[in-house]
Image (cartoon, rainbow, N blue to C red; front, side, top):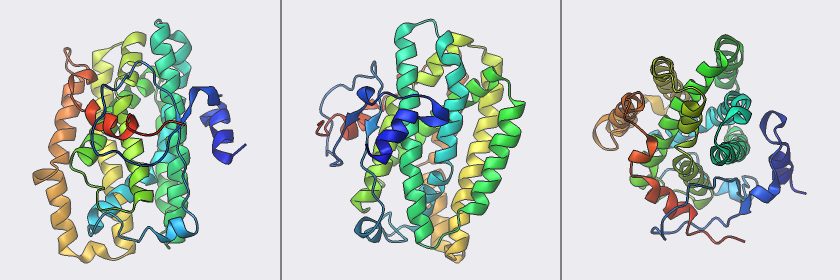
Amino acid sequence: MTELEKTLEKGIDNRPISPADAVNVNADMPSEQSGALNTDHISARFFKVEYEGEAAEEIPRMWVGDNMFLTHLLNGYSLFIPDGEKINCICIKPHVENIKSEELKKRAKGLLAQEATHGFAHTKFLNMLDSQGYNTKIFLAIYQFISYKIMLPLFPKLARLAFVTAIERINELLGEITLKNKMLDNSPSSAARLYEWHFAEEIEHKCVAFDVYHDISGNKWLLAYSTILCYFTYMALLFFSTLNFMVQDWSILNPKNWVRGFRFMFTKEKAFWIITQGCIALIRRDFHPSQRENLYLAEAVLKSKVIS
């Protein structure tokens, strides 16, 4: 049994994940959509992650085309994924057995399985960044302190679930921005596959945490409070995790990186406006994640793969 299969069996926080619920996918990315994506069945996908030897050498320090800012933005995103996905599972897991709908309960378990594989894959990627000479330990120590010593102990269970609902909303939107703008088209395939696969699954399961929260409670005031807190926390973490890498390779001194960052946030990809508006929409009474038409982006990555 491979290390990945053992991880999927054990899951995150010792939560069992059945290998029968997962499928193997090859890593070739399709160029166009292949039909409607069925989101009624959410399951983990085995994804071959190998960032050692030749595969690691294939990934330069500036791997998103010729764009150092986007490289470090995605490096920074990877920094808080392993623990972030674990926290998502810790926050959702206590509510699963209280879900009224059996269909939603199955989707929630599928979401947890996907989060487990994401954490595993990004851990491998972070090990590769460590081998490139980057220091990830300081940021991770601060992030883990905030997460495990402040947020988890102080937040009630329902507030944690509301917070994760907002996290999943932002993850979905980041995935949409990345895939829709084809940001990874000029990247080494071994790196691009990781993020395309991850972001596609974030879009695929975008409704699950939201539906679980509304099945359990649906309190709009708590969701609004948690969304605001999540928005500022997430944006700050993404900024400082990106800055962490820019400082280490001195690209922080290059004006082009700041110009590219401004364009990403405000004028080209418009990430700031999309994420801000998306979080505001999350707390509207008439909102549901299915209203945003971005499933075709996930479909182009997931449905056209060869399933073995």
